[in-house]
Length: 364
Ligand SMILES: *Cc1c(COP(=O)(O)O)cnc(C)c1O
Image (cartoon, rainbow, N blue to C red; front, side, top):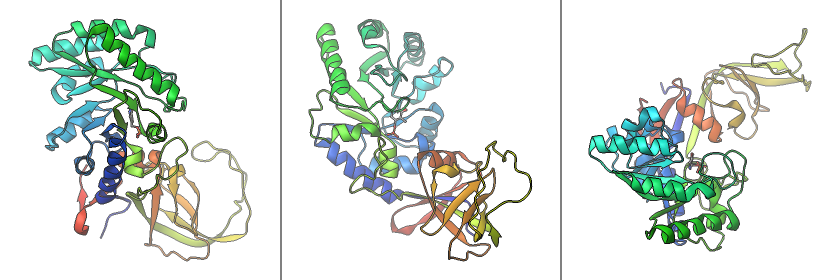
């Protein structure tokens, strides 16, 4: 029996999405790091991104980078979250480059790299208004000067990240500021920053708008490659597939039931105050899927099926005119949040489908 719930991963779709975006961005002088964090550093997903033409892989967790290295994924690996001080030894051992905002961390990376007899690349992240990670522009010159002094550290470039915490849109103004900072660092220190990493999937509209991309020559893309959507409005990107991931789950109860609960009403399992509806009797199914497998709010059911709610282990749906017997399977599409949780859940079997329809379950 095929296990359920299972997350089916179509590697061809991921590779195809990647080649399309890599080619479109190459026309703008921009290369792509494929971001693997939502896939927990899956070596198969990493392989599809690399076949699609990314120039490096990025992940926010050193554990995922270790997974890929241990699986012999050969690529330049970037840790795109500032390293924990407690992890610098692992970071210099496994990542070629890390993104940094704290001199104390870069100093610790320098010591660790020196002890390991290695060089470690550093990209300095700059705060451009989204108020997540970044050195304030006025502090950049000092950070560069200190970084350049450190043995076994190679200053590779600068970068920024927008649209994640406050939804700040990458545009000509903030990307122009990043370019100008690159120029001014080059001039001040008589060097040439190799990498100017503009941002993530939210940068695509700007990068492909035809506007001048200036010094920005690098983007870090996860969601756009894997789910085929831009992330400012979550619209599908023309020419990309949005169905690379499918979550398949099994019906465990199927009955005609009323929609209106009876008895005194208080909080639900997750603390919500339900607003009872009454639309008469429906074909209600329970799917063996819940908060411990995925983010039920991020699922899209097939046409004709409506998700009514979910607790830890039960997802309740109205199947409309269809009758789905016990044992039937339902295919759900996932948003980033649902995908992240499904990938992370030990209850969801990951099934990787490669070219020529080969299917195998993956034990991670
Ligand atoms: C997650 C992440 C990305 C990738 O973001 P997507 O929206 O998935 O493209 C890029 N950069 C950083 C710093 C990140 O944390």
